[in-house]
Image (cartoon, rainbow, N blue to C red; front, side):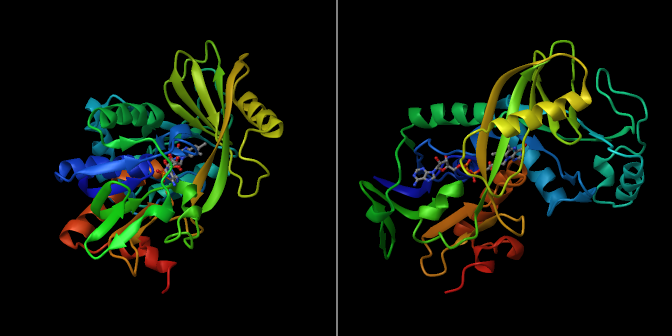
Length: 345
Ligand SMILES: Cc1cc2nc3c(=O)[nH]c(=O)nc-3n(C[C@H](O)[C@H](O)[C@H](O)COP(=O)(O)OP(=O)(O)OC[C@H]3O[C@@H](n4cnc5c(N)ncnc54)[C@H](O)[C@@H]3O)c2cc1C
């Protein structure tokens, strides 16, 4: 079976590639074992502001301009939930930092020009809060399920573990079992450590744990960001978290983090609540906090997209577009995102 592209991995990175390839009229097949997926457990927040320091994320404006309409145009925007973030100040001095951040022209469209002193309904904010605008949440798990359902219908999705030993690189592209293609793109998240061609990329698993709680009467319609995110999911259910850990003993939820997350939630509301679910996932992160894209220096038919562990929602569509344009129109990739900053041959 001849295709333009094979894709290994169907998290946000793999999904965005399929959407761009469809737009370009290219044929593809996706392989995903549906084992360790970071995207399917992601909270899905999109936000161009670094909320610790009130600075802009790398490529903030380009990501917002490109990626947000991309989600709006997917399934009529059904998986996109625009809502502001209320950044709760931990101390009065943070109000000054907020005002300093406003001086940054890249950020001013996204930060309310005044700080709010009043409490948010049922949320305790003794030092006030600032509102981050044009932000929201993507229901990533829902989006991926929807996409897989459609790919299965067109015989474009193989639910199986990709076996690297079986891949043959030829002068015209690649052959894998019964499939041949000009290109193969690896988008395996933390699974890349098993990939013989891209395993040297410094993809560091970062564990995130979160709770889903039911808190009747809280009635939040915007996201809260204090020591943790509190994200409305509808019907007074909320996502609390996630945690960040570079060192951990297992990839499963721990009792200690459950207690920590409960304590954080109780800092912000006095209302009673029930924990409905406690989950964990592994983010594929890169020490310089930027994703990696590019073709293999020795094998032009092999490419990768990875390192979406931080702001994966914003990055995925933008990176997919950049890589497909690079493969088919020879458009140069942004230098600060290329694999070559880590891979020397
Ligand atoms: C708890 C948590 C909360 C997060 N919250 C946010 C957030 O609010 N906003 C945000 O922007 N980002 C968030 N992220 C980060 C981000 O969404 C993800 O890390 C990012 O989407 C990773 O996407 P990916 O496609 O690169 O990797 P993944 O989603 O991990 O997908 C890789 C896929 O490849 C498959 N795979 C790997 N190897 C093979 C193989 N050999 N054969 C077949 N299949 C294979 C895996 O099964 C998996 O499905 C969060 C992450 C976590 C864990």
